View 1 (tube, rainbow, N blue to C red):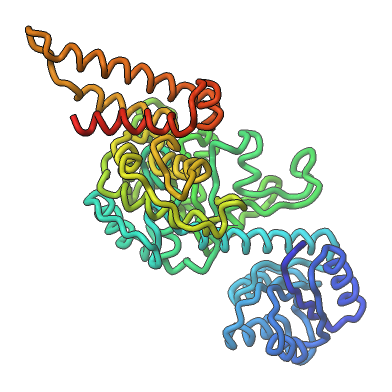
View 2 (view 1 turned 60 degrees about the vertical axis):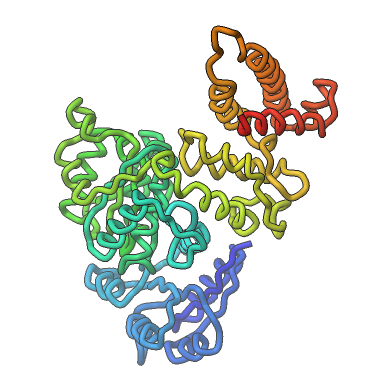
Length: 473
């Protein structure tokens, strides 16, 4: 069910009734007021998320109402309604703090669409607060990174966040570019404004212009109503353009215009709209090389890369991995990515051998891969402890192979190492069979043991004994 409380303010009874009926039909809680004075009293007595107010009312108009509401510290979102649309009216409303304005006669689907947009943005802001975790955490983060690479990155973020500079974030997939962009936004003066994230590689090429800049009704086949673009939705906030290297060249030209003119023109519109948006972009590609290949505009690259941040790969900051592991395990029941069965679960212990395997793994997928591995291990873990057998085969195999290469040492001419070498080869063969069985069983160790004709405890023991002997040697 929708979760917004709406107050409709209009001195015309018929307009109030029509708007209130349409809003209630859409599932929102709604009340009405016939004047600004009544609206102020209602706002003082109850919490409203959205106020839909007429601009022209006797005694006190809607814009003055908005100013008084803001002066009292109320942050309700305002949508202004006017029968006398003009540029001056729009400017006055926006300057006073209105989220948007629409003209009479107001269509039911139009007001409902505005409320749906507000609800979606509110949900996005709540999600952003909940997702302040892992790579850079936040001011209230449980875990503070201590590797030199991440401390240097944090210093850069704190220096650039309060400025208006455009930022380009580079780094491999999964290093936390999106979390870094969100942190820059939250530490800036725009922190209370919208943060709109866009994956440029995930939007079909024929739709991306409409998604970014919006369109008017009838701009193309299927455009049955006007649509605000993501840049307009991010007004007075930050837009994060992830995978910017995937943007088609034609759209790069239009994006360059937005950066230079600070205005966007919707598809089918005759005039442009001014916007106040900070741009943070990211790519896991080498944009400089793409410029040399003619696949990315040089002037756009220079505009975006005013301030660059390179996210270090996880393998380059292994000192952070133990703390990250415990942070992820400790937060698994509180994050939005936890499954219902995990919520409220007691913290898991981590077997020292499993931790060693995790720390030594090269992590090609970086922090995102580490988080996925730990969530999987938490589901498989028995007895409140993550053990080597709970980890994916590729993690266990990499560690066992590295240790096996160091077992026994070189064999001498007298063959003193031959017996030990044979024993370890047999054990490695046995362990590899077990790991393949676990992999084939989708990580289900019990099913793997059944298929191999051994007990589950034997499966654990063989894995642990092999790794223990390798470590002892």
